[in-house]
Image (cartoon, rainbow, N blue to C red; front, side, top):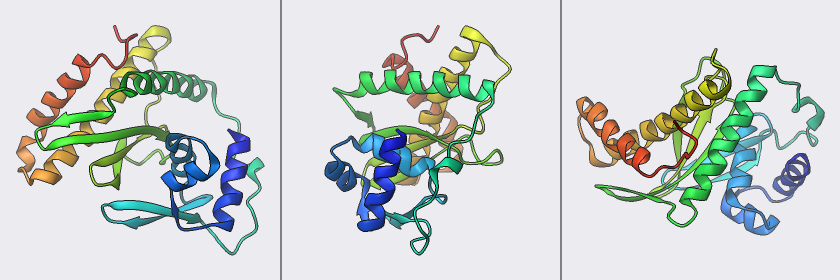
Length: 208
């Protein structure tokens, strides 16, 4: 991952203004690998340029600066954070496997393609948020500063698995309501419907 971050930073410095999909194609890796690094280091190394419902493009956060020393990016993490990160990574890998043959989540407004990543958003930021990568193509960002737990072992794993599903459901619900202009009072029943759908898809097999 460190090698890919070096490569990505150098590539964007030379060719700013491309979408994650185009960058991934040029570097011969997946879009998810690129998005994971772009959003993890957004406003630190990279800067996102919003284009509404068209795919965002990326530049260096400070295009006039020399390449950032990546040693400062990789700081030691606390034990509980590392454990949580490892569990979340395993959960997301499992979700990816389940969605690999059907990566569109069906709603009453049509099918929505989703990608889920973890990024540091700050302790005072929301648990999760989404951004539009393209029309009906979303990236759901789970804030890894907000899911620390006192649980241990299987309890921690299950708590984080449920947290991931709730994050996905929250974002899909808000996106659906934005699309259909449904009144705010409909958020909870709409989320419950979507959450039950996620559970029925059995995205996370180890969930007990």
